[in-house]
Length: 499
Ligand code: BES
Ligand code: MN
Ligand code: ZN
Picture 1: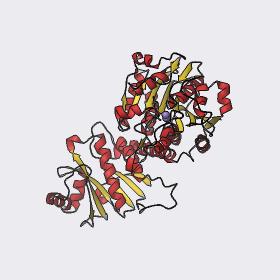
Picture 2: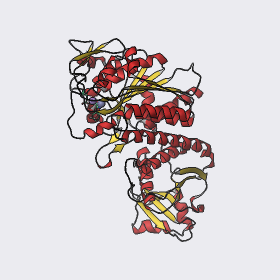
Picture 3: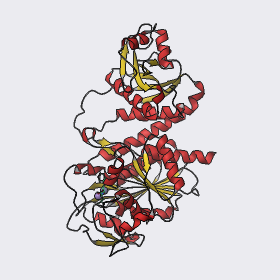
Picture 4: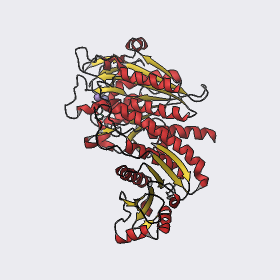
């Protein structure tokens, strides 16, 4: 799909479909009013007759309006004007594209970016529109022998504005929105791929091809390299699998090398059976998504490389399967991590932290300014925050605030949980420096406490995306989160330096 921004009036568009908003109850936005004026009150008449009341999510397609230059007008309900917020804007755009897909229109001109929204400028609305539109067009059909249903006809989308002053900023926002959507699509594709295809080796190949496409540096560490580095914890998880583990490193240097990089560490468990602490059968297929942290790292790097963002970012992905087997790690086994700290593995299903801890130690060699790890780490996070917000834990107040700000801006929710020392004692082991589980209470926090023991040398934050990386049920599929949050965080870093 092609997007462009154009300044002009809605009533002047010779489009297949002009899209305008209506507030509840029956209040026309400026763009809708303009269409109403040239059509002799056609829209007003429809509202008065009660066919459309502006309720959130409602839509109505009007054909062949008298005196209109366009073939169709799509009315989109925006809900109550004083309740119109970021989420309502996104919902309206989603409803609009859902309706557009059902029409035969091959092009559309949207007039929603001029609708006033508290604290958000046209640029924000433009990038949100692009992201939501691309989201509504995403399909994963690689593994089907034939595609289902009718393909949407829409090819070109024009984002119309009557305000010329906002054009330049909107153009930049369009490019950012496209880059983020692109990164999200990659993240979704990798997540949705079956684990017999998306193996650690496959992820490594993907990283190498991203590096080729954008002229980045990719390094793949093999099990023998990990052995030399003393990554006993990562290797302990990989023992049960026939698939060789990989440590994938992807470097993007968008500014002088003397600027310390942001390191993104993504959990890449391409399938989590639980290992010897085997998971129950129900919904186990969804554990193919246990590499969504890794996929989001690749998605973010794709997005910033496409934007040529002036930041330095290193992605580190420990990738492995977690399988039972004759050689697998057993509950009670004690291993030595790369940091030298020993770990008693009481539950082989708490494998994410075991692979992340060695990657976090490996990150030290980049002398990072900031390290953020992203992981589908705990079922407890789904219990705490559901599928709405990612869990955020950090040892640095400023970093946590920066991430929360980016999260709100990107409409990619996150919520902070505490990381107080009080929780650390749950990780006590009688036989090693620490245990890999901390009991049922505060499972998300004790998992982060475990990681915190490997992050003393830099500012660090942890995103638990167990509830947000994919959807279950009828709409099962990866979401592409938290690519928007992280990309926005990196964009905001470049702004801070410029001012
Ligand atoms: N990948 C899972 C976490 C998970 C479970 C994410 C369900 C999304 C849905 C992780 O490796 C895991 O198994 N965690 C255990 C930890 C426990 C053994 C301390 C969990 O959450 O049950
Ligand atoms: Mn597990
Ligand atoms: Zn896992």
